[in-house]
Image 1 (cartoon, one colour):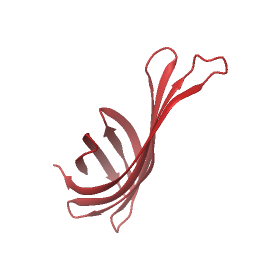
Image 2 (cartoon, rainbow, N blue to C red):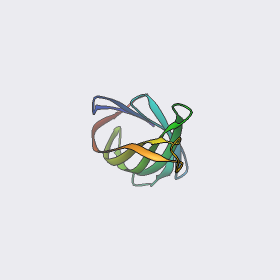
Image 3 (cartoon, rainbow, N blue to C red):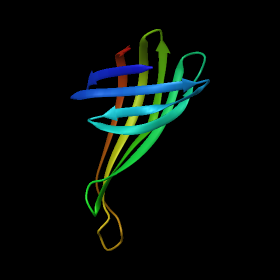
Amino acid sequence: MFCALEELGGPLTLVLIQAGSAVQGTLEIADRKIPVSGSATAGGVVALTGSHITQLSRDRVVTMTLTHWTTTVEGAAMSGSFTYTWDLDDLGTPDGTLRLATVTLSGVLVGVRKVG
């Protein structure tokens, strides 16, 4: 299953492979890929989660997490909602970690199309 969404200032791209009720693949947001996995029901409901850590420098890391993804697939269309969190941490502080920023993006998928 391939789908792309032009929203939120840039594309959101989801690529999934399905084996039975299990699905896995990648979610790309703002040129960052997050490995995702979850399930797909016979009724077309897809539920996903995933996380990825990127080392920006010796002391800085970004953790990207898909905390919620529930969509329904009908034919070539997908609709539903998701929540994505982006955390920037500084590991060079005396206590080990300082959260510098957290961005949470929640959205509703509308007009998603199947590609390929």
